[in-house]
Image (cartoon, rainbow, N blue to C red; front, side, top):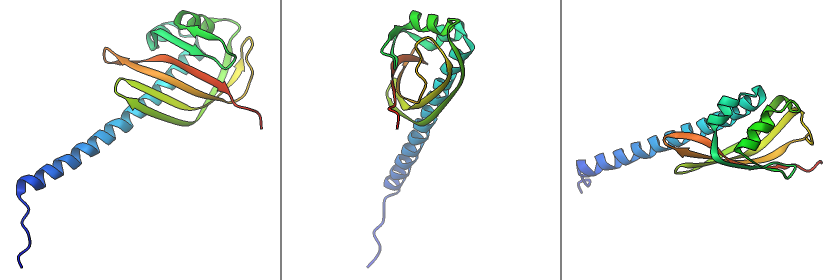
Length: 151
């Protein structure tokens, strides 16, 4: 028996689909890393009290629920970051995961911040941060932090 012949067009189509799937996975991984970098950029801007960067990085409809229960909009978050009562010295992230849904990205993980702020309770927090892509650029839309229980 002669082996079956696979038409060249079918072989080419299968190969192209494989390439497209691979490039989509690569693009997804790159975007996930970009969101993690954006998380660090926002944190750096808060630590440096960089008002201009925060104005650019936070969406106008930003809303965040902090681990102490306070809910801050963009203006309040920036004012809090600029406060002389806030002195952050270090931030560590762990277990970061990013999920992308079109123009929305959700970052989850653990964040531990060192420093002082009025009402701040030290300890690691579980974070969920939401980013949105508008007009071709990503901004922090908001999120939520929960203090992890002590062990």
